[in-house]
Length: 311
Image 1: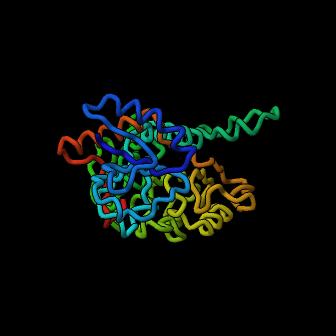
Image 2 (image 1 turned 180 degrees about the horizontal axis):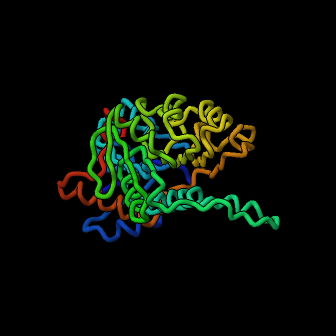
Image 3 (image 1 turned 120 degrees about the vertical axis):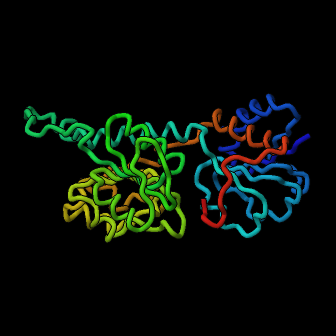
């Protein structure tokens, strides 16, 4: 019997437990999923969301893996008691959801949809024709699984896509840059900028005043990544002085975004409530089951976190 501990609040447990049990039924061994296993009897830990009480991993002397249900791991990666492998969620519907959100909002700004959606007043506004996609350069900061998926989808629509990452990547159809010089070059052409970096000390406020100045005047910023990637005050200033035309933001430093936050009433800001990409319980359960099966077969785990890099 393989004992699997679910560490997450009741709402997440109620949503995910049926799908996890269904996925585990297909495994070639018996798996007992519970929220109440004794620590020294746990073989695998599924780390869910909410106010989980699990902070100390020291008693889990038998556990082989902590499997995160989300892509982000910033709330656990720095835990000094975590002395076992940590895997983040890759797949589970995250990639497709992110592609759909990013593509939708890129097309919204590329086509200038707001002028027509907000202008149903009898005025025939045909004075501006959007460029073809091949003439609208897009930059994606972050070329992990989500960044690559979004970049590939946008390139398939004809957009010239530049991707920037900490280390050099090679993604067919994308111009891939890295390092400090690559960062400046990636920003300099970005008429639409998409942030899909993980939140780490190295990426904290990476889009600050200096970075925003490197963007072309009239650029649009999309942030479905992490709230901490942006210097909020610098972005507001860039919006107010007209250097940035619009910001569509899905993630924030404080969530839910407080009702008195200046992003809410700003005419050049669109707030979406952290919906760009969510783990789908049925698909995520398959990813979790596959990783546990790999552990029992003695195979390397998938999607392991680099603890030093923070993602």
